[in-house]
Amino acid sequence: MSDLAKIAVIGAGLSGLACARELAAAGVAVEVFEKARGAGGRAATRRSGSYHFDHGAQYFTARDARFRAEVQKWSSEGVVQPWSGRIVELGEGGSMVEKGEPTRYVGVPGMSAPARALAAGLDVRFRAQVKKIERRGASWRLVFEDGDRHDGFAGVVISAPAPQSADLLRDSAPLLAATCAAVEMQPCWSVMAAFERPVGSEFDGAFINGRDLAWAARNSGKPGRPTEAECWVLQAGPDWSQRNLERDRTEVACELLTSFFQIGDWPNQEPLHLDAHRWRFARSARPDGAGCLFDPDARGAVCGDWLNGDRVEGAFASGLLAAKGFIAGGVA
Image 1 (cartoon, rainbow, N blue to C red):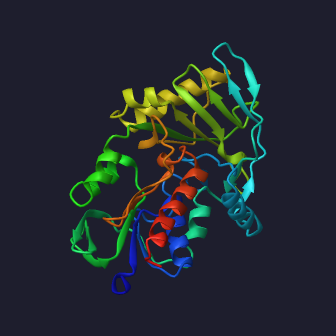
Image 2 (cartoon, helix red, strand yellow):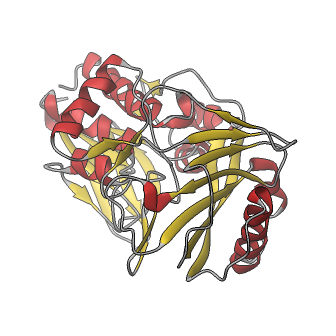
């Protein structure tokens, strides 16, 4: 393996980057390929002028010891801060219950900050969308949308949602592909709205039961965010998102904004900014506890939050497990 000691990691979300860093720390050469223009995956931040929205992952907790240590490091570097906003659960009958959970953290100035910290020092190629991966004897080849090809990888790690992982692995690692293909993923419509005046909410974030909306958060109330306008992120539940999956995003944004004002019985106001983003593969219908998938014969691995509880810290731990599979197999 000494002449093929390089691993390709597809995806620069938290799981892929955690895997890449762990491999690099063990002395393994790693290249990370990301189709987007920046790191983070669904731990993402959308900017429109002075309006900032965490339109994917809203916050994260740190229960796992290894992840807690990483969060403490990020905290000391100013990459993350605790979010001390008032978080509640809204019932169908109008009840409001405080949600006293472990400390919630957010990236600063946006949720993509931890991913950027993990990517620092790694060989990450952005705007590099992998179209196909191929096994060629003992090595792997990556074929990109633009026709470019990269050969000679000792192994490959895919940190993408299950359906996308299955598509990439179907011809080269059928056992891994079949496992991924059996996973049902659920969508999520996420609305971003900015207002000139406060909407009048008593909470900063709310889990919402019995409505089209499942979550609402005052994004401008998070640490390090601009406060020139009051910015909100509204996320629909999986059932509503699935039923309305192919609708126009402007229609979706308007309908969910109406639902938001109805929840609090607040007076309507015209937003300064309104947009929506569709996460086609936001979470798994039945979160898997496998941690990661690893095929030692094919030298292929799959990691991601959907393999480890659908949480940000689960994504991080999944990436570490994938890296350990290669290290234990003698790549390092």
